[in-house]
Length: 508
Image (cartoon, rainbow, N blue to C red):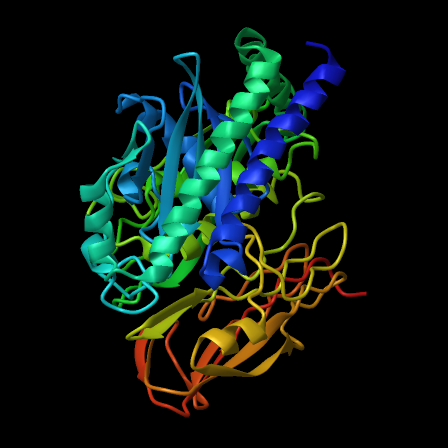
């Protein structure tokens, strides 16, 4: 396959993922999927190796890339199947992220898989929004071990009914699950069309060429990191259960373009929900190094061949079940990126930015009859190439802002303030990005859960740049903990001030 043919193939297979995403977005009912775009789509080969993915959510896609092979090997696949799962210790991330996997057959031969993962605000937790300040996985909602939801194009009624019963027969949940099924059906049809046009042997040869090309591109980026060992340690604020200043440590060993990450020295798993399954740790590692590869590097398994990681079983980044993990996916994953970038700054200081906000500022809320969840943007860290961006989602998340009009139309709340948080970016030759301020007024009694970070330890600067402002959570003006559950009354006002990004360089 020549370079032009490979380039066209990459674009065509990527377009399948993009169309899956469009189908999911436009058929979903919840603002979380339809407006915030909290979903991801990908294609895998018949062994479960990543072929391509859409530019969706890094923590979704990297974890699927890491865990898909084991899922594929454990099942017997037939044409027309669809498997559903959310178990973080069997290929998921955290319970709200539900994954649908469908095989692709041509003339009776298994040639690959399509998959999508989407965040559901209702996954059956005791608290609305299904992001509780929990101590065990069972407290976080319904655990779906990998199971056939559809078998040879026939819905498995017992599986469907069990899930819907656990979600209290929510019409929105039912609609969103059907949207995920539709997205996979779209992917299967489009991929079958592509394979038939190319013919199966040529398609399989193209996948080999794709991964080899990605490997060469990845090597060209990784070989620029000087050989050596680089260490860094950063801290999680707390686990919501009384444990504070929880360390995450990495030692990165680089040799001739091959990278080993060793997380020995990281805290043991904790009683709160900031623990990670190893798949989430891998997602953060893959993302961090993918950022150092040439822009045209295909996002496939070949790009990650030279990256290996180890984290002791039972530590914060390789937790054992039934550890609670809801915030590990959203908060700890961002700190893993900070730790990796902090270590790399000692190897290639002219390429690494200061810490970004380091939190997704999760807020989950609801009452009988409704659930909502969102993350808030913050400051991006500045770097050698420029200042940090203001009020953007950074690193492991890539969701959009839910328009205020959508929120106020669907839920009993008002947004009283939504603005840049001026002065929150770290000082330096290049200024860190500003965080934001968002104030909610609740119009009826509402349960709220907050899972936030960088409320104790600010995002750090680099090369003499200053740290950014820490985030703050306030209820009617009074400071709240970073992780807490609340029962709010009508008229209460909750304000989240997201952290800024660290500054870079000594100020002029």
